[in-house]
Length: 160
Image (cartoon, rainbow, N blue to C red; front, side, top):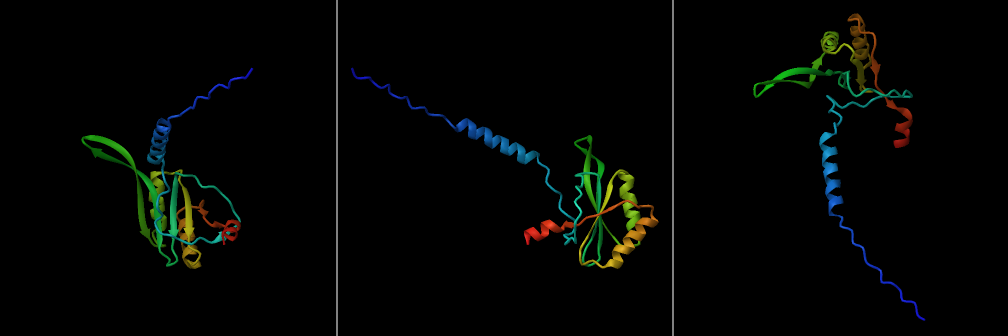
């Protein structure tokens, strides 16, 4: 007696709902992601062995370029009026300064957010005299705690 094989029924899965959900999730994540804010000036950082993670907020950036220009940028909350309603928003403030007024600009930024961490990004070709003057001006303004940002030496050699 011959055994009859059952016919297999072909299964068709409609992928349209899954593609729709994927696209909606992609749009959601793209619209809610906060990207790194643009730097005031691009600098080539010196190398070191240290590895310290910086927080994403509460930072006052001091940038010293290779042309010995000094820029200070920080976040400040401001109240704006839109259609009769007062809203509070965060605005990035930039200030170009020199060694004589850098401590006053930093103190003005710290008056907005006293907990802010002061971070110095100096170009590797910036003159030592300018960095020394900046650190002296900060110490005269009672600003004694700050970080100097560098590139990781091991990562630089691995990439090169």
